[in-house]
Length: 246
Ligand SMILES: NC(=O)c1ccc[n+]([C@@H]2O[C@H](COP(=O)([O-])OP(=O)(O)OC[C@H]3O[C@@H](n4cnc5c(N)ncnc54)[C@H](OP(=O)(O)O)[C@@H]3O)[C@@H](O)[C@H]2O)c1
Image (cartoon, rainbow, N blue to C red):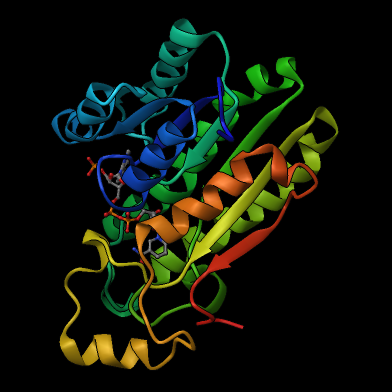
């Protein structure tokens, strides 16, 4: 098992990619703290994992609220006394053309996706520095690399995550902490559930592997970046996109 005894926080773990990452980490022996805004939804993922004998706990957290993030980190430290892995996966979309975009749509997406990632990373730094080890994995998107009409707020937040990742990697690399980003392409989850058949065909045609990704595809890379196998990799934004962007 690759994460035996490790302590991991996974944000946005109530469904989709975050739930798959939490499950994968549990299967690899980690103690996992799952969080999302909805306590009932994240409990519905964590409780079955705990019933199977995995070490999964959950807490309601809105990563866009600094006080929630501080409570998440304090709870994790009270439970386990250390934090080895942080996966910043929580994210939202509020898609519309920029001409029509309300300030609230811009602010909500930037605050949840980018500021929330910063809050969580900053909150675990002191602990990881004291440990002289840690893994921070930020979930960006290919949209942050290539942009997308109707997603200026989302693209800006995801491009921002890559800049944050590289800067933080340079700040704390000498303390034994790696910071990497994952840029998924089109992954089948609730976030991508409302596309028309025509749009799905158009997107599929852009993907050399001619298929959409699964949450498990993203979880496999996340596991690698969380494990000792990736010890010499930091500051990277690695795509899981079937070759969609190259
Ligand atoms: N699916 C794709 O094709 C794709 C592609 C590229 C990147 N991504 C990124 O991958 C990540 C996961 O996406 P997904 O497809 O699994 O989306 P999803 O199915 O919509 O799940 C999003 C998760 O984030 C949680 N969440 C949202 N805002 C939050 C907040 N402020 N605080 C805490 N939790 C929050 C949600 O739970 P609650 O509603 O309970 O809070 C949920 O667990 C996102 O960052 C997304 O941008 C997805």
